[in-house]
Image 1 (cartoon, rainbow, N blue to C red):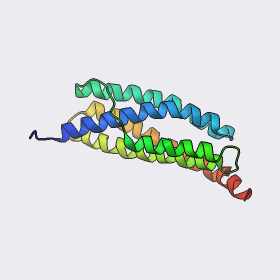
Image 2: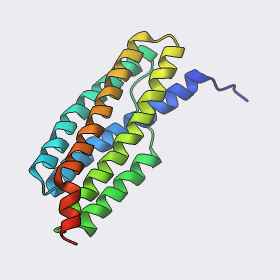
Image 3: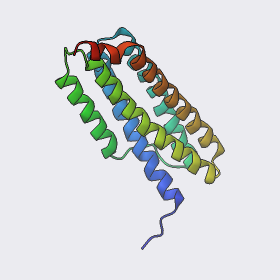
Image 4: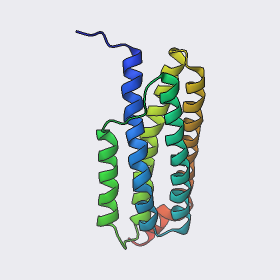
Length: 165
């Protein structure tokens, strides 16, 4: 049996998050179209632009690591996006739609934050300082997006969903 090392784990996780980012890139326009709040639509559009950059950074990390950029199916993101699609369908035209979309988007952000934090630590451990810097930069942007989503929820999205009850 072949011994698997941190190199292998890093590569597998990198492929996982690469797949996830590309899947998220396809989901964000649908979320933006479904959102009712102009601010939430704008947040989804902004994050789509950021996600394009995240994909490019991941391609750079693959290059630094000496591997070709490729994804592998990420069951976690598949599940999170499926839940988002349920929210879009089940709450369409309802007061709680945007609150549900914020929740779904934050589930995506928290997944990404976990992955990027881990990958950054591993890249550092593996001596890939340039990759570490790229991964940390993306991690910081994911944290900022999560904070912006929280602000949107607290500044009206959640209360709109509640007041209609």
